[in-house]
Image (cartoon, rainbow, N blue to C red; front, side, top):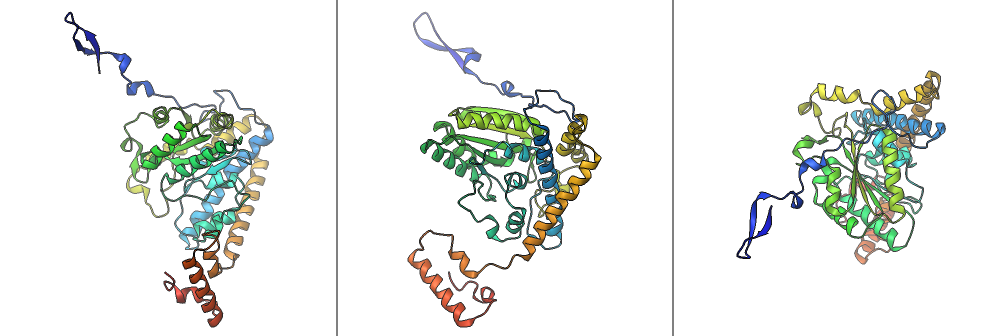
Length: 391
């Protein structure tokens, strides 16, 4: 855009030469992701104040998430679980961010935040139920401050902002962590969520896991922006880019952003630069659009191995503890699988129980018809026989 100047005749003309005061260029947004641990586990930044016990705990959560992930993939291939989205490679982004949340804070996950939910204390049996097609796995309880996994892309971000606006309305010192992938930033709901968050100074932290692929669409074909973090500026708040495979860096950045939100500082957008090692879901074949060379390069940046090297260097971890941890976490996952598969089927009447606090007349009529039919037939397999009978 040219700069306006006045001529001798007092007429305004525009200079042919651009005036940089009126221009924002892409070059201003070239960032180096914030990092504390290098890939070899060496410290290159200020380590957050985490005790040895806390460091071991976050390492344990990452290992547990990896074992859960492997088990879920095997169950799906055996027909014992539905379509599943792997978290492998993104454990640091998820565990590191969820570990920052206070008990009363809210976690708003996308469909891939299995590790986040595990870190927040969601029973693995419930996660297996959800991925097995049983909605009871994500039945919302009054004490829960974690929303169900969200399959539609980026719609959960609006819900997260709504929660944050309610926190402001109630004058509570809480925050919301709303998660999405890089593909989610291409959705209209992303724009609406960030716009509302900026205008109303909502206490929400948007965690965008840039795993380089939105199903088969690479990052460079999703947006022309140099970074995803810079998108925050258009909505009136700050963006941060962090090494998403460095759990200490993720913890440091997210904990500061959440504390800022709790104290009235408004929203922050955090871009975690990471990588999806596995397929988009078990319904995908990533070999059709990615090279093994690319995958191998990111495997070398494995977040679990990085933290493990750091713990070993600090001499607070050893092979004996590693073996004990693997045994303990494997047992927990096996117990969760057993509990999931032993869960009795849902009562057909349950479908009416959590849709409305008070049933509509039409819903009540359908419920009474179902109850009467079940009582009349006394048939435990009634669902299969009446499917489609109650529109």
